[in-house]
Length: 549
Image (cartoon, rainbow, N blue to C red; front, side, top):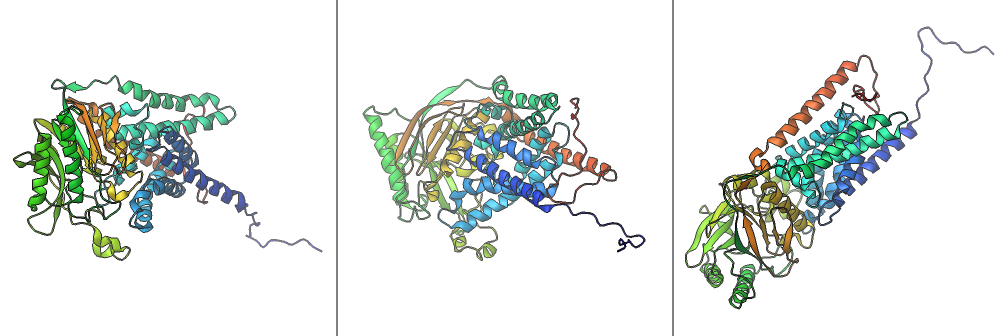
């Protein structure tokens, strides 16, 4: 039988490559990305295994290297979900899974976008350096949009126990996060080069990046601060009065929360009278410590004034005030002077969407009945600094501690100590309070300031300018912390630079992505890239492959 012939112009059929191995490799990368995200979550407080964060980014860097942007996005999204779903579990404790999952997915999209950029720059010379800058660019965006941003989960906030923590005094949370990510990505590149025959010599370049990242912590201690006045001390008391119940209805019993804080303050006054505690110069109560407006309720005002008179010191009182329009409210911190009442006031400058106010209320009501429980708070103005018995106190109410600009403003305006009055009762016995406490520790180092954390239900704490917690309370128990607190008028490099490191690294990351795209397009006519999602893209070969880049 004659052999079959081909018609003129017909090419022979090409064998179809096996899809099984490619799919298995993609699945493995997805599993590694999810596991890396879980490791990153495990590195955050209340755990102290900070070193898991570089390992998480080493794994992420390994799976992203050489991927196309779309594959990088998917891997970054999976990484983000592995990190954020457990990290933000507290957001759904009393309102159900939908808001928690929706928030986690929305924030993970930003991480996916950052990972797409990291994949694009991964083959450039010194790829880990540019990829770490791209990650910081992603953090910068998600800290600002939408609805004012959500900085929770920035890498620097998970490093209060790391030897890299002093870096915060040089470049803030941003630079601390950058060197942490860089260390992890450099580890991945070192491991890759050492594992390839004949490439061991080229591992010196990523090793140099790793050494620089690790050395940044000790080197930051050598950077001097500017001292504009001598250090002094004052005695500050933080009162944790506790709440009658956990959950969203913690304040449903009228005046119960206020009564608790008055009672604990009067007990402190009794201890001072017999010498068991030192006399405080100022007292800090938590956010929402007065569960009714003391400016419109004489009984609440009388209680607060009696407590201030008993302790013989001004009290920073957290209260929800009804504004003159009768519709909106302000989350305020009032300086209550015994016998005089309110002598100073600062309002929360960045109110929380979906809690203190509801954007697009009619739209989101379609998804959750809890929408109508959101408040109608309006943001305050100013720099957050109040004068308490001559002490300039920078007030960051609850989640305001997560926003760089708010804390920067307070320190620049002359705050010599930072107070973080918070109400964490609505999040129950979750990790939220420990995550927030870690932020306060990083801010202490960033600005060389003592920090006093006072919460309604815990954890309250006193923190030194080195980020060390000197005392703390339990959760959902009354507590008192009295601390001889350092007052400083120093200016760190981080305070002076403000957002310059963040915008510089963001610009570097964006330019690196542009360079990678440009080089890839130049090579496209010469190199055919794979069309399979997740296969290596056609970017220019990495300089340094021969040991000279």
